[in-house]
Length: 194
Image (tube, rainbow, N blue to C red; front, side, top):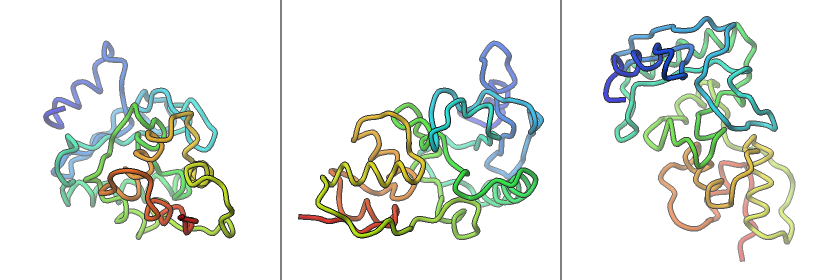
């Protein structure tokens, strides 16, 4: 949407059949539209850690940003404040704080490359990259990447290119081109590159 007000109108329009629990404007204003215990219609079709129907098991926070510029400081500060409260109230671990592009790769692209996910991870509001599943074997690099991405929660049934794009949007939004050794680092693994 072009503005927080436009997004607010759409999210509150029953004809649109889309909603969220919260909307945070670029200036840090936060609107609650749906009670946290109620279902909102923000995620749509997708999958995370083998779970579908994400709408029934999540709290949706929409951010006023078209995706073509960095997120404003007041907005990020409000998001951090809201996340700290929600995560405490509902005992949500950082690995379950995700973006739309994580659960619906190829269909959703937000929050996008300009979102500072690392900032949230540093404060334990989102998962940090890195775990060690053991030494790599001689498996195909893309298959290894897919297994590691699935272990991190990227379980949607998508093609290799779409999966790579989704993982990059979350951990390396500047990444381009074919699968590279650097794409394994956020997944906590050193690639067996030949």
